Length: 354
Image (cartoon, rainbow, N blue to C red):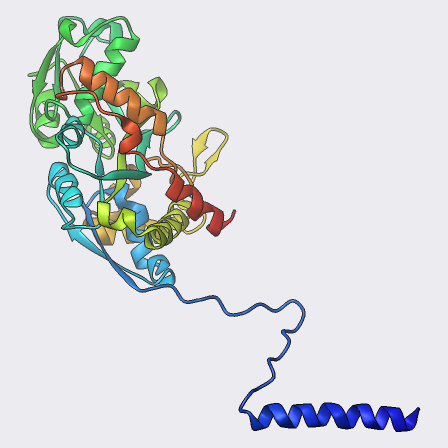
């Protein structure tokens, strides 16, 4: 037995020596529970077209906290002064990601053959959260949407999200746009001044301007849009180039979803039906103030709702297209399946985990 064992050991040593002589190395067996190092992802530079609005908070957080860097993505902000140029730049590829409102002009652009994908939430109207509301002057006798018949209603522009919201509110309460006089005033400041001077009977207005008007003492809220309907007001868009790079697209959305969760937990948690500051609230407010150039107190008044995982109200996009087409605000109805992609975010969330 001893002789047989000695011969076996000798044979093994000979084979090992022969392999070494041929320049081969034995591959070590991984220890139980250990896995190979993950393959490093390709570095990608991503330019994000956006406005200096609070609803861009997750993007600010993702940049500031290094969530995009964790995904080997060099994310840079490119600032714009209006929503429509962002959509144009995204479709044209001069920015990789667009983050802005979803308007009739965007749908008209798509109907005209431009390509882009709406992939994630960037702000919505949601029950229990103050975002956009119908306001009247403090002296107004109007107490309900039904009482708007024959009245002048101020909005920013024809085809804007405000135009859509007042139209949907009227539809819900048995009226239509034909029952009122729409007054486009081009700016938020124009809406506030026209309400204050009673040049219009009511306006659509968003936070933090709602709170500012109430505090100034010349306006009151008739209806919060979020209490009347869920509405996907704005979104994150991908250019055709970024959308075609599936790996980079999913990595971007993984970082974005991590940031939306960070934002939600800090700013949108509720207790007994009321929004209360959560973990990292002060830090998030400071980040938003830094990127928007707004005082922190103003930021606190206008923290918009968005889904914790960044998920779109995908069905609402079709509702919007159908409404705009009915009102002849877009040239033709479009197939929303060609502009909405929820698969990329689903894959990102699967990688991110709970």
